[in-house]
Length: 228
Image (tube, rainbow, N blue to C red):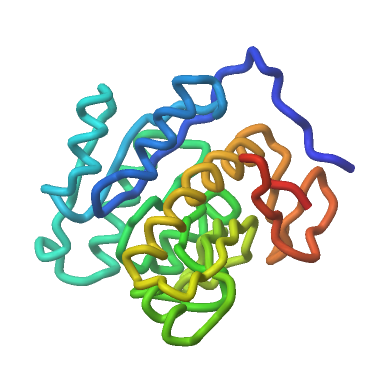
């Protein structure tokens, strides 16, 4: 049976964004909400770096923003527990990792299974972790891109929902390739979240479903939409 699609007049789903950096994906979400491409409301931005520009972007937009410092906690688990206590207090429907640079533990993720996603700059499962663009060039791949996936405790290892692809050019360096990937990251994240917020995407076990139908392969970005 297909997943129910919320009425357009219903209150928009509440999003919490986790971010560690400049917040360009956060800005893409804010812009998409403002112009009606994303039926959602960002209710908080949390992170691990108090001086991260993403937090300033959030505050400039009138959104609650808070960073906890990992060094203030006795362990990674203690930090994660404190961070997710703040997340839970905001009562989000979904959590979006948008440039959040820390691994999350299984204990804090368990209550949010199927409701927390991440955007990663590679065509997963290729090039998990850091320095993806330089590694793609070194490996000599013809295509590179970005992926949105459900988050698990495995590094960039959760079920992949959707991807956007770019060709690797002969004269690419890491910076050139990163810039082209960033162009497709924004619409990829927005389009995927729109499906999630409309109730059209779900996770059952490790299987991503669109309208209740299992996806054999990730959705692909085309004309700012993600399709099978």
